[in-house]
Image 1 (cartoon, one colour):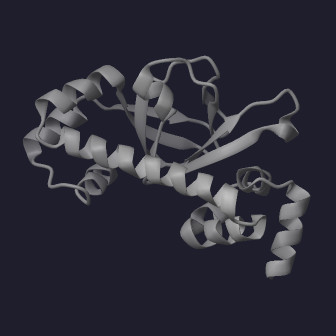
Image 2 (cartoon, rainbow, N blue to C red):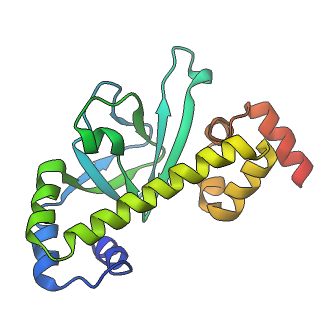
Length: 190
């Protein structure tokens, strides 16, 4: 939980009273590798901070090779099916751990309470929403404007931990190519 407080304090000064109120509502959740902890049709009830591990966001398909990975969240980042969380409606995608993962989660109801009660709640909420929006917007623009090789290089430069920790088949899906095409891209670059 110390990592979460340190992260929040990069956004805003967190006094002990607000931290105690907020942290008393956190739930520690631990998942083993390859655990789908949110399925299509479920309503996302949590926004979570990844203390350790990693998660992929993907659209499942009958043929596993055709699944579409559209997001990764690693240690020190927040993860949620955020659109489902905000609207409290069923999600159209799944969240799966890529390694043993520990999350500190807050429920939708508890987060609304933190927003109403603490001085920092709204600031943290706005910052998190803005950051998630910017990541999504940047990815969409990259898919529309960049070549697959540029998308891979951007990922390599901006989020090198993904390249080190995530299986290549998921990275290929994320940048919109087949694993074979990614292999050719990696060969050309090296």
